[in-house]
Image 1 (cartoon, rainbow, N blue to C red):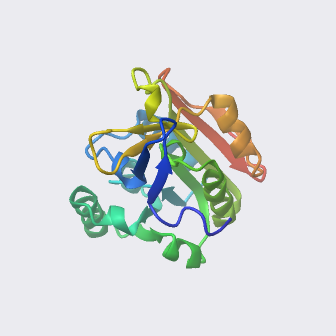
Image 2 (tube, helix red, strand yellow):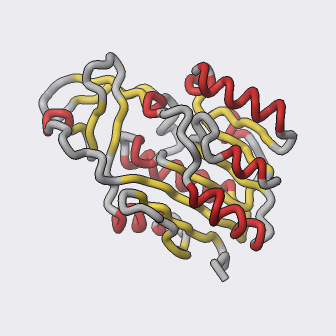
Length: 230
């Protein structure tokens, strides 16, 4: 299992029989503001629970990392090396490294797996749904659990309602390949909330509460150990 999700490039066969190349780093949308839940709810909650260290898995261009850094948390961003070379991502990481001594980077998977640190919380924001192999989503959740302290938190963000109008010919695995005009496509899966919850809970996390503000967002807060909302 540990050998899965070590390369961002996938060569798969769509339902139509077409051979497609998926690049999981191609789903990045640089410049988007952070989800308000992070700045308006999560920061205060983490402070109240004395959270100090956070790992942002699949951090992209640090959309959700920056508000946490600004709030004083130590944040470690995890990304593929290929993603870190993209101009928008490289610029964001250079800014974070320059402005925040409480920021660090872990290249996935080699540095992440070798690093011995443990964290008080983990963010997995819009990541699981762009992973085309279901078993690999379990790998990520399993490895994150090992990285978390005995009493800690896991925030998972996903989104649904994005597949309207996508032709059935673009079905691949349990989702769709996006942007058919590109040589390397993005992948997107609409993960039903109950399926997502069951997958998270299989790894020993307990549900605390949903934090979604919009109907198309699934924002789920989980705990490890006896971590609670109150």
